[in-house]
Image (cartoon, rainbow, N blue to C red; front, side, top):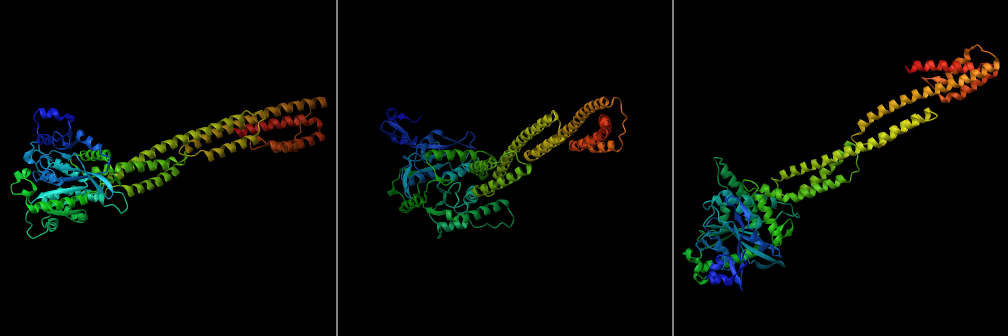
Length: 574
């Protein structure tokens, strides 16, 4: 946009001063932007927006950046002061009053930074001119945004005040005070969100009535009596208290008027200006230079790209609400810390091997949350306004925890379902054994119960335990019923064979007189509603004795035992 050929401009009879008033200077045949806005007002003149053309020039800076801003009321000589600090005439530097029809709007920067060596670090220093306060056609909120942005961006903040310090001038510093309370009051050794701007009270006044300028500032910061309990006075008094605490980060300087004919200042050389003014101006230059430091954000100096990114971040926060607040800035600077702490919590929880009992998961959550909150408390910015960030972190942690609860429930259900199915299959296998064995069934039954109790964990355990009880009870009842049925059929068949053998050997049907032998046999093999395999050896010993005494009666004895036993079993099963 600004790549214009100087030859073309000269053809239209543009003078050097006219080019400079446009913010341009010629290098060879190329017109280069040397004065440009970085912040402009929106159409409603209530909020701020970035000026992309100007920011492109700053992005090219690779050195650490420092910014010196001049703020103050409308038509208080801010632009002239900046030109004096840069050793530029009105025709070379910032436009002054009547020199430019469109006075300073938003924030403008001198496009050629000064290169200073600060503690061995080559630093690019930009000088910023800000739109004056209290001008016609804009709101107080707009002024507050300009002031807030300059406060945050600057390494040195020159508060340019004509003649004296008013109540309104002190009230304007409320934002700076809040920033100090929220960001700068950190413990020693901890990174701050950004280094505070050095506040320089610059009083342009010829006579201080025997007082030093510092005494004048100190008096302005003393409490004002408020016997009526006026809230506005209370508020300003609180600001006074805070500014007094910030004393180490502020200083005062007085500058006399350069000449009585202020409208002709731009055409005057130093020899025509008040000698005292020239002397004090040089002292002011040295003082400002001694304050300049690279802009530090979270422990790191910023190059051009980083400075622009920082500017974008701050501007978004200041435009967020109806009025600029330190709370919105606190949220911006805590955003990265919040994300890191949330990642810390997630990493601690990710080490868990799910599923876990609900109580165990809750204990680990509470422990991890406690460590996360402690880490955030050690790093976060803001004293009063950090509560919102703390609440946000708590909400985000609970969201992550809910996901772990759902994952735990899913894995618990999956595990317990697999164990349940395995036991169910095992019970089915025991049901269809060729030779049914109560001992084997009991052993399998016990093994399933123990493995399920040991391995099934998590929130699904209670539900699957109930299912297991029902399934295992049904399997056991079915097995016993089938076991008795198959054993009965086997004994009937066996006894019939023995009866046939008895009939054959005795050539006829023998009468059965069971007596004590029958009752003894029954007591041996039938108890608790089913046959006991462990009694069979004793039973056969008994049968052997009977056979020795009455060989022909063995079949009858067996048949009677089976029939009697079956009846007793049926009655007990019912």
